[in-house]
Length: 173
Image (spheres, helix red, strand yellow):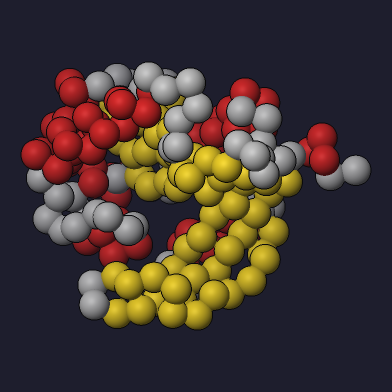
């Protein structure tokens, strides 16, 4: 199995839609609804591609490519160049979970953020109900920073979130 991160292209619309069209993904990601259709992925890809052209993108998302097909995404959201931090976001299609794919993708994205963008801190926020992502972040040695109550409106309800973070090893001394 060949895994790599790459920029999204319009030719990825079908695979992106197929793998994103999952109630669990929609339940745990802001801005993703169920069902998720091809037109949704086309719109998303167009937005993401605009960011690729900027010298200092606000966010950068890469598709997780397994043997030529996009099976998930990993990105740095709301990049703060002044304070050198950003939020990492990720998801993977249900058929590809539990295979170490996201672990590899997250590690590559951390390297990208710390080395290429020179970030000091990369953090993740997850809904407290998302036990799989909480366990995953802890497995990857993200440090728990706290709980924020009623911070995000999702499907008509305000949800609590946990924040986890990693500090660039160069600053961890």
